[in-house]
Image (tube, rainbow, N blue to C red; front, side, top):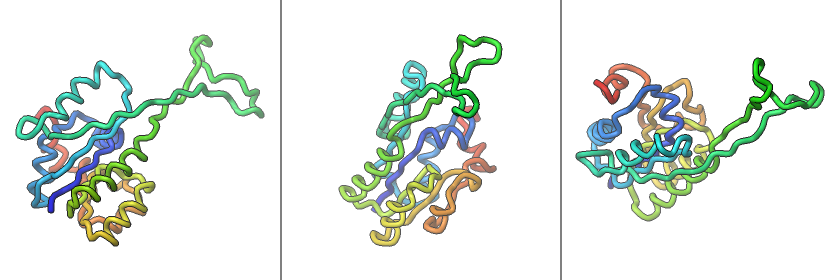
Length: 190
């Protein structure tokens, strides 16, 4: 019995686009799904450590003061951008200040970490319901295994426009966090 909850922080931020009350999110999940969150994790890459510290501290507070999540913070990789060789192969620079070279910043290992901890948590805790706040089709195989082989009920939280077609068929329900009334209910500054 119980719920395993796994949140891709970057996905949630992209989908919700405002500050979310994670305590209310936990309450909503437990009330709607009709069970208690046994283990909950929040996965992200540290884009601004001083700014993120306040959020991270709030996320780890146990209920009723907070959502009681375990944090898994990964790293960012920066890679300088260059024009393709057929266009000269030069660095991509700011149009008005050629001293500013553009970089591509990507988070690394978040999806792999989420899958690892999700599967590990299930095998240790045997929760029967999975709440996944993510939409990436890369989660298809482990989700399919949990639903079809282990009889876990899947609940997705996100926006229909960015939940993969590969995940949707396995969900008992999709909670559209970008739609009303759920969006207003979970906004931090109600």
